[in-house]
Image (tube, helix red, strand yellow):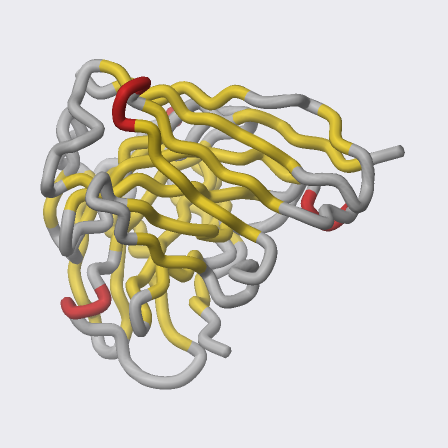
Length: 109
Length: 119
């Protein structure tokens, strides 16, 4: 069974840059997995930030960017702001199934 | 702007069938490039994709739920639905309906509805 892995938590200083990653329990992530990133605050529906590795969803600030770094998908937040404090999930398209990661709790302090 | 709204009972008894409906507005449910999804999130756990349907009738299920889940579409009402049979407490979750386009993870999400399985 494929498991999508993410860091459980991360912290960044206001104005700083942080990169979150999304990997596979076995194998490397590539564009063909359509890596997509969501932001979710408690009690709210997820909001798509980045899809298909590096395409920014409508209305998403350009301080959010996506890429492949090594064998993982990556979400970079540049110039972090207080309201970026949230949970971030990735999803990969693996053998015809959408498989979500466990999420990373990002703290801005 | 596309809007998705889930509806269904908030409470279901164990062993019964959970039925949920998603109403689509601001967009066409029979758009050829659109695929309609059910995704759930148990309390404190990760999101889990359940199933996808296309207006043509194409369906695809998560193997972990395939034997219990049925997704369907009603073009006349711009709705799609999920039935999950033989529910247990582990099916307690916020259920989201969503849409994605072909070859893209750019999901548009409903607000979600909490379904609790309890006697």
